[in-house]
Image 1 (cartoon, one colour):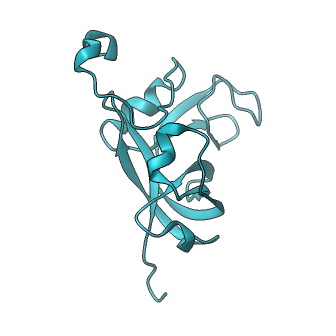
Image 2 (spheres, helix red, strand yellow):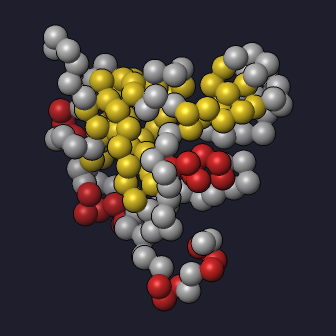
Image 3 (tube, helix red, strand yellow):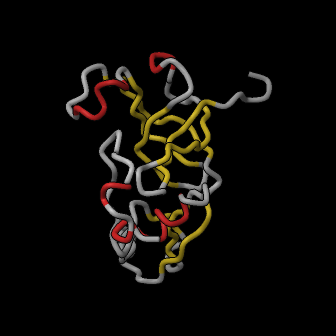
Length: 150
């Protein structure tokens, strides 16, 4: 059922700013409802394409397909937000905002959750976890994972 089909009085109110859905990003967001992290893949230059687009930014190829991602990666960069500008996020502070290098060859800006935000470090191994959104989609976030021998 689409969000428009649910009366506004019955919709859960967002507890954060929720990303919009477009025709191009629709498959990404639809997959999150089932807990699948998807990424576009350019069939012309064999590269991941993220954020969702109509053409590959590397080669301008139009042959893009959706592939399921491993959902694992490493923190590339991190900052801890102590005073968020968005009032919907105020009760979550402090929280970690990180660029994650996903093992499939793409990068995603997200939050690292499930640990003290000050413990998030560059190079930390992480895996996708999900935060439910008000319309049934799920927001991909990351949580630390233990590495064998670490």
